[in-house]
Length: 240
Image 1: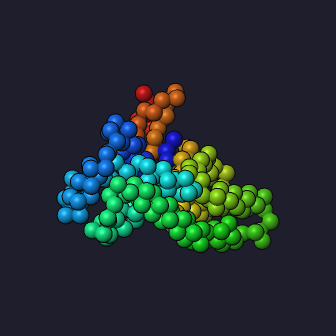
Image 2 (image 1 turned 90 degrees about the vertical axis):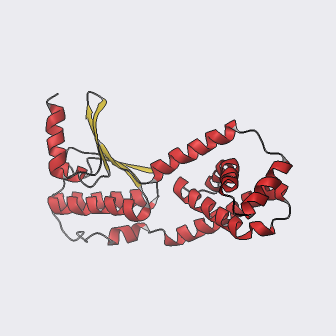
Image 3 (image 1 turned 120 degrees about the vertical axis):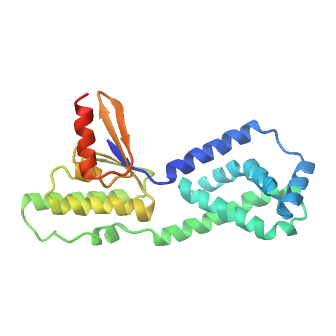
């Protein structure tokens, strides 16, 4: 078993750590916020870090509530901090900073969502990215066309994680390459996370991470690997 893993996992871990740290931190009083804002305006990095630790997790929750995926929400939060950096010298009421940040990240999230909807590929766009074989009549080619359509429909809904069970199992090498190329492109260009189950080393070779299972346990974990390296590892774990 192996997966196409984007930076989304690392972002998830970091956000969870920030949230845990915020829960352990006592709430700030007004004087504390005034001090932090004044120090941050003077360019004090620890003060900025304290503000990010204090408000970051709640801003991420606000952004996620607008329907954004985690990495998209983090982009909206980042833009919110950038706005604060540009205007922190004009902050006159530091005690109201939390409300300003939440309003700003909500607006940024809505703007980002509108832009993403405009850029979001349609099912027809995804289907057009693959060679047209609908005029062919053989059963095998008909199955291949149905597979391409199924992948396009799965991607157009922008799921958090897409699961693919032997996606190239009954396809010829040409169609298999097209499907694998589409899966890889969805990761690189759309930020899609995909978990694929396969016994095909060539299919596994497109992954960023390759997991080997034996008796229900993960027995080997590889990063990006060639088909040859995957076959060697498979032979090794099979002989355990």
